[in-house]
Length: 145
Ligand SMILES: [Zn+2]
Ligand SMILES: [Zn+2]
Image (cartoon, rainbow, N blue to C red; front, top):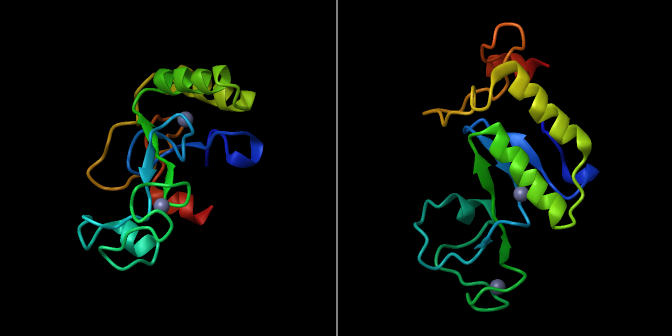
């Protein structure tokens, strides 16, 4: 489940199983070096994700940073109001954000408040709360849907 996806605009915002609300590949976030592995610990997930050898600089720029190896990072919000303010920033920057993303967040604030369920957990958890009980819907139940 997500508030909005790149298929319906310029923003991909979702409640993360690692806590908070994530704006993924956010064009307002600082660019991060995605494949330059020099100096990264050998077990850094990016090395595995991009199928690289440790200590390999980007072929194109030799590690200086270029459009091949730099990509937009993620931002995380533990307040729904902060997430709404962030969406407003996207709108002001001329990015397309579907109205349902705002509606969904406002509805959640009505139901659960600003921060309920957005705490950063020790282990991945279901980010979805049951509207009637306010309890987390277990991850296993989400997977079965
Ligand atoms: Zn963003
Ligand atoms: Zn590069």
